Each structure stands twice: as structure tokens, then as C-alpha cells.
Length: 331
Image 1 (cartoon, rainbow, N blue to C red):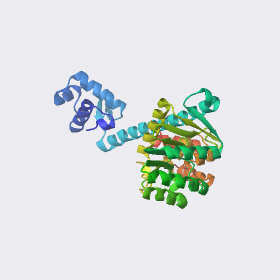
Image 2: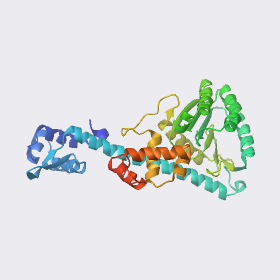
Image 3: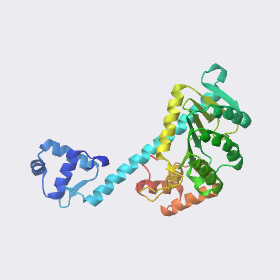
């Protein structure tokens, strides 16, 4: 029953037996549960590592099981920390993959490398995208970071999107959570949804990206200036990795029409991401860019998190967040 929380069946059996018979020693426990003394000893070692057993007061040689309400909170806290660490590694992998691809495309001439085509300037990007969009037959996947979309970008993309959806192309787009408070972007996304597009949001995205029929991908050369240039990638290995990145992000994202859930600590995904960036020492400007919000909003989010943690500095906020299990101790 507790395998999902990191306890194997033997260890769980011993833990339950200790709750039923708190005074039992190793030999008695082994008899009660039908295990060898060695197996019970190994289970007790595991329970000690998980802080589910403690020395009994007045008898340093005997262990007692902590109550289930405390024990389950300990286990869920450990699992939450592991999930947060995994999410952090995933975010780092996303950013590293996008950066590596961009740097490679920037340093290597497209003419000498099959599978890479460079585009310079916003006009060239839009012209090439128009041509490619006409050739799409099945699927059009998009990362749309930067927060609320500009009126110019939405106006430029609307005819292309309507053409795709009108031809029955499956369109999925991932925006940042910050667009949920920007009416023009929500209206734009809602109009696409009415035509058959699927929209989700996530706290942060590694880069702007478009994938067409899983055969061609377009990403900016520089995430700091997406209008300066882009690269078209057609290599099978690269497309496989980018499609996997999209699917992983899509599964974790929330449909636009649904309320963004909070984690067990009462934090939204945006707040949890901001807290991690805060603990890593990022500035308000960097946090604002990652979340797609204004500097003022980033400062407000940081202040609210510090207030909730009763911290007077960002460093103290990171320490307190780790102590409360809001962040893994590797942050």
C-alpha cells in the first residue's frame, strides 16, 4: 500500500507490526510477521533512514514506530522534495537542450550542415513560416513564452492558425500561466480553441518553438531576441528530442479553461517556479522574463513568498523553503 511513498512491502509489514505491538523486540517482530531476524533488522534500518522509527524514551536499545499521521507526512514530504528535484532537473535539461541547439546553429553555417537552415530577421522568419504552414498536413505544436502576446504577433499568426485549423490540422499551443490575466491573449487563445485548437499553460518555458508534422522545428537563435533570427531543424534525432520535450511539457501543463491547481504547500506552479528561481539567486528581471510577467509583478510575487516564509532576505527565504519541504535541499 505504501510502495508509492517509497516503502517496500517487507518494511511496511514491520512498520505496521510495530504500531500494533510497540513493545516488541526484533525476535518477537520476526515471529509475528513471519520473517527472519535479518530481514526485520534490514527493515528497521530502512525505517530509521526514513525517520519512521525513533529510540524509545527510557530505553535507548529499543526502537518505537512514530504515529502514522506523522510518518505519512514525513514520507509525503520526502516524495515532494524528490518530485521538486526531478522537476528542477527537467527544467535545467530543457534550457540546456534549447541553448545547445541555438549555439550550434549560430556557430555553424547552415550550408555545411544538412538539417539546419538559418533565418535572419523577423520578416524572413515570418515569410518562411508562411510557406511551411501551407505544407503542414497533420500537426502543429507551439511553445509560446514571453507571457501576454503582443497585438502584432497575434494579428500576424491569426490567418495562419485559422488556415491550419480549417484544414483539420491538430494544433496544440502552450503559453505561460501569466497569460491567464491578459484578456487579449485569452480571447485570442479562446478563439483558436473554438476552431479546434488545444491550449494549455505552464509556469515557464525553455524557449519559443514550433514543430510541424514532427518533421521540422523552428526555434530562435537567441532567446533574448527571438526576432533577430531562427533556425529550421529537420534532423531526425533532433526532432525526436524536441517532440519529447513538447510532450513532457504538455502533460504537465494545465488546460486554459481550468483553474491552475496548487501543490500541497498551497503554491501555484508560477509561485513554485518563482520560489525556485528566488532561491537560486535570480534577479527580479530574470524571474520576470522566465514567468512572462512585468518586473513589478515579479517583485510582488517575491515579496509575497518572503512574507509567507517570514524571511527578511532571499537567502533566508531559500533556507526556510528547504526547511519546510517547499524546495529540495539541492537548491
